[in-house]
Amino acid sequence: MSTSSAAQITGFPNAGEPLIDPETGVMTRPWQRFFANIWNKLGGANGLTSTIYILFQNGALNAYQSVTGTLIGSIPLITNAGQPAIAQTLYASPQVLSPAAEGTMMVESGQVEISRDNGANWYIVGLTGGAYPLLTKDSVRVTWYNVKHKVTFFPS
Image 1 (spheres, rainbow, N blue to C red):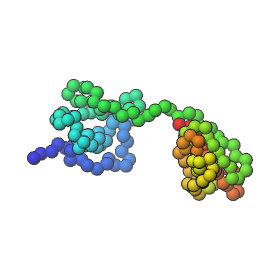
Image 2 (cartoon, rainbow, N blue to C red):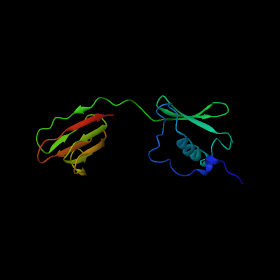
Image 3 (tube, helix red, strand yellow):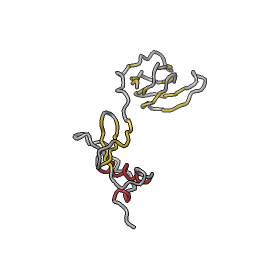
Image 4 (cartoon, rainbow, N blue to C red):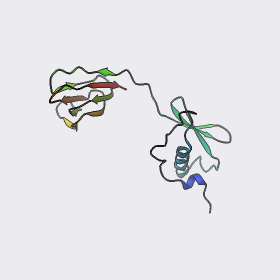
């Protein structure tokens, strides 16, 4: 019994391998093989023996049947471009920040805690700053000990 070369590839592409070739906008070959292998292991196109090709188009990965060019499926990768960054004004430590939208809070330094229940419970998520994804109605408490540091919110 023989197997196709795509079915023999089981590992992830190398960590540095880009998903999409920035020059062509086409998925790189190692990622094509990886996704084709998953496709085949999940039953492919109900046993059809044709191959597929995958293109990155308009913020989505689109899979096409190679013989007919028929679109088989699409996976959206990008929703909307993020909104402009919003610098947060810090007054006294600790300070609670409550962005009005989902996004990422970047904290340059200091202890960072997150609450998802209006401050009833706080969870330490960082002691030296970092990037923290937030949902709507999350609160962030930043504590600094010497100099106020930069805190920026990036809405989704």
